[in-house]
Image 1: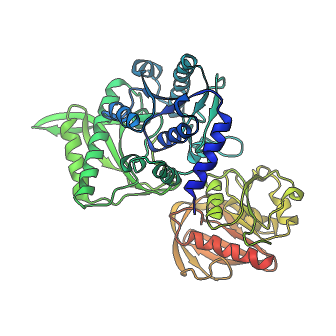
Image 2 (image 1 turned 90 degrees about the vertical axis):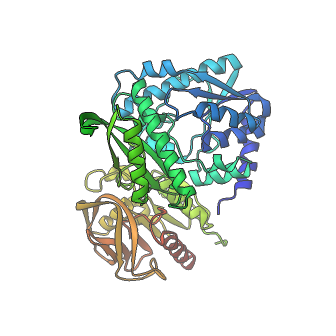
Image 3 (image 1 turned 90 degrees about the horizontal axis):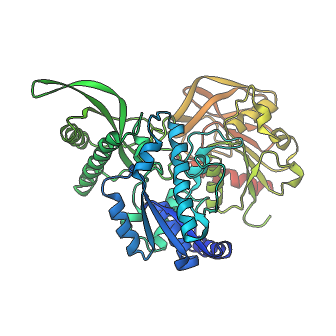
Amino acid sequence: MFNAEKFIQEQVKELANTIKGNAIIGISGGVDSTTASLLVNKAIGRNLTCVLVDTGYMRKNEIEKNEKMLGQLGLSVLVVDAKQRFYEKLEGVIDPEEKRKRIGELFIRVFEEIARKENAKYFVQGTIAPDWIESGGGLRDKIKSHHNVGGLPEKIEFQIVEPLRDLYKDEVRIVGKALGLPVEVYERQPFPGPGLAVRIIGEATPENAMIIREACAIMEEEIEKAVQNKEMEKPWQYFAVLLPCKTVGVHGDIRAYGSVIAVRAVESKDGMSASYSQIPHKVLERISIRITNTLKDHVSRVLYDITNKPPGTIEYE
Amino acid sequence: MSNAPKIYVVDNGGQWTHRIWRVIREIECETKLIPNTTPVANIDADALVLSGGAPRIAWESPKLGLCTDYIKHFKGPILGICVGHQLMAVYYGGKAGPSEIPEYGLAKVEVLEEDDLFKGIPREFLAWESHNDEVKAVKDFAILALSENCKIQAIKHKTKPHYGIQFHPEINDTEHGEEIYRNFVKVVKQTA
C-alpha cells in the first residue's frame, strides 16, 4: 500500500535540502498543483509564492474560487491576468500539439517574469506520472505533449522541481488529504493544464472559449446534481468538448445551423486507462436540453462519447 | 532471499511500464525501473518483468535493447508483457507479427491452462489490451490463455520459469490483474 505519511516526510526533507531561497509554483487550484504547493510550503514556508495564471481557458468562476481557497490554506497567492496574451498566442492554431507547445511556452515565460520579480531560482510544478509518461521521450512514444513536460521550451531560466513526479492521481489525492486539503479539493476531478483550449477542437478563439466554458459548467452542474439526488455515482471525470463541425437544427419553426458539443464522462483510478461512464439517459437528456437551450445561438446538437481508453484518450487533444 | 523479492521492471517504453512498477511496489516487493540497455551483469534482481512498449516486433526489435540477453542469460524468472511477451516467443523459435484484428481496450480472456500465473483466478475474466502485434506461433511453450481475436494471450515455457502475457494485468480495469502479479511473485519465491 502507498504510505502517504512516509512520502510526505521524505519529500519535505528533500525539498528543504534542494530549494535554497525563494521559489514559485505554477498553481491551478487542482489536486496536483495544490498538493505540491502544500508540500513545498511545509518545506520552505513563506519563501514560496503560488502563481495562479488566468489563461482565459479556465472554467467558469474558477480563478476567483481558487484564489480564495488557496488563501484559506495559508498560501501566498499571486493572480496573473494573461488572458489576452494566451488568446493572441493561439490565434489561428488548429494543430493540437502546436496548441500545447505554445501554451507550455507562454506559461514558462509568464512564470519567468514573476520569478525575476520574486528573485526565485526554483520553479515547482505539480507534474505527476501520466504527464511525463504520455509526453514520451526516448523509447516512449509521444501521446500528447503535456504543457508542463513535453510543451516546455528548450531554454528555461530556473530549476524545475517536481515532488509528485512518481505518483498517480489516486495517490496524490491521498497525499493531499493527509496534508489537510478540504475534501472538495482532493476529490476534485482532473482538469488539463492547457485548460479549455484543448476542449475546443479547432481554433481556441475567445468566443469558442466562452461556449465551451458554459457547456462544461452545465455538464458539471447537472452531473453533480444527479449525484446529489442519488441518480448515479460521481464519475472520475466529466466534461464537454466543442467539435469543429456544424449541423442543422430547428428552433421555433426556423432553421438553425450550429456547432456540435460532445459530452464525456469516464471511470478511472489513475487516468492511464478508463471506461466511459454508463450514466442514466435521464441525466444525459437534461444535459442535452440545457446545453442546446442555453447555448441556442451556438450549439445545435449534443453527443455522448462512448469510447474507452484505450483506444481513446480521456481528453480529446 | 529476504522476504521481499527484488523484481525489476525493464522499460521498453510502454505507456503502462510505470504502472507495472507501481503494482509490484504495492504487493510489497522491492522494485525499480531499469533501462533495457542495462547490462545483465549489473542486474542484481531475483526476477524481471519485460514491459510493453511502442516498438513493433517484426521490424523494430533493436529498440528492445538487451532484452534478448536477459532471456538468454538472466538466471531468475522472467515475465514478458505485450511486446516483452512477443519477444520471448520469437527468441525461442516462435512467430510474432501484426495482428489481423488488433485489440484496444476491453477483451474477454479465457484461461486454457491454470498453471502458475492463473492459479485461483476464474476461467474467464475481462482484461485490457493495447496491441498492434501478437504472437502467432510458439515453440516449447504451453499456451495458457486466449481471447476471441488473439489466440495466444499467455504462455509458459515448458522447462524454464519464463512467462508471457499479451494483455495488461497492471491496469486497474483488468480483473484479477494484481493476483496475476502475486502469482508471479509466488513463482519467484519458489524458484529462489
